Image (spheres, rainbow, N blue to C red):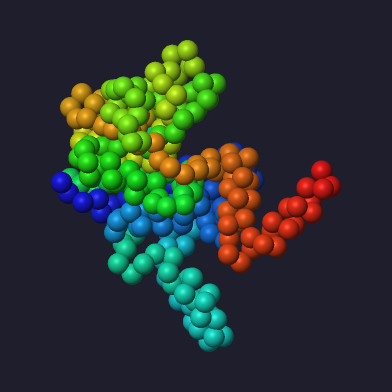
Length: 293
């Protein structure tokens, strides 16, 4: 079983729900307290063992590449001023042993197409896929680390899932499980992309975390356009199930849908309440502010 060394981060979306803030700035660069969304995702991947981060970008995404690059002028200025703590923050956006690769997605054909664009770098290895919109906060092992344990047990693709409300099934890819969850995992027999509640095979919705085998690339090449006239990753995984098994992992932790304004604000507030430099003063502010509501 090959170790998972590579992580794919599709970041080519337009972020229209946050206009005008995302007119020229990528939605993945929106900050949660003091770090951009995409950095939370990158840190999760690195903590789970990724050594190569593959960013699938679009025309307006240059700030993401700049963020993960060295900023020599800034570093020189901080060093001259003796601001070592800030200098360390800037230099450690990614560890020295981690390599970043950037691939332009030439056409806006959906998540499945974005993952397919990563094939030249991923090759014949298993890999992570993370959507930066989904920020997952855990108190112990992060989401990908939990999923990696299922991968080590099964050697199969693993999908991160959570319990969802029946009325929300049309927002998710939904799995059809083989039986019940046992120790947070269950084999997957099928998937449906954004089904109506009455057609949903379960209440386990796929969130933006995947471990995929390289067999997914052949499936993606043979997957026709689906919902939204895009190449859906869910459809390709369904096709892959004809050749390989896949498992679902119900991770322990809280997921924030930062692709929505409400989810973004929830993440900002709750992570600020955990921030070592802010939590006390911020909690006091919230208590005082709540009295005015």
